Amino acid sequence: MYLEFESKDGKLIVHMSGELDHHSAEEVRNKIDDRLDRDNIGKLIMDFSDVNFMDSSGIGVVIGRYKKLMSKKGNICITKADGSVKRVFELSGIFKIIKFYKNIEEAVENI
Image 1: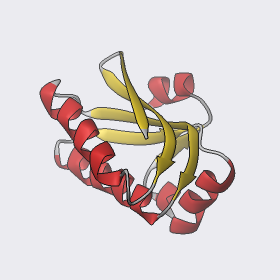
Image 2: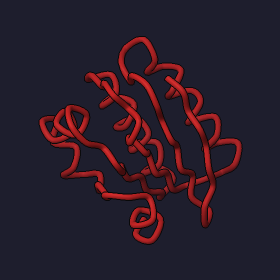
Image 3: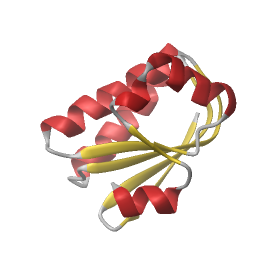
Image 4: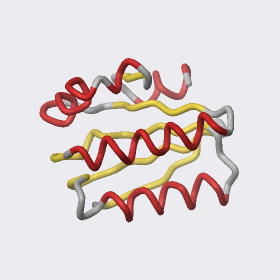
């Protein structure tokens, strides 16, 4: 899994590409947490446009970041997930607690 970080209006955008599964989940978790803590950022946008596979470990990564940011009065959202990745999110019920946006611009405006 490859991660690219971008800051926009005090929000951290994480562009992910590859597979978010039990092999990559811990590394993704550590890299995102490191950036959130180092730059003291409370708003996270997770871009799933280039994630071609995700299992329940990916749900764990997202929920973990949600809990971390909620404890700091922050916020998190998911953007650009489609196909089987979006289906995993829908089946998990995650969109009941974490907002989903079609694109990054919409996420930046609303988070």
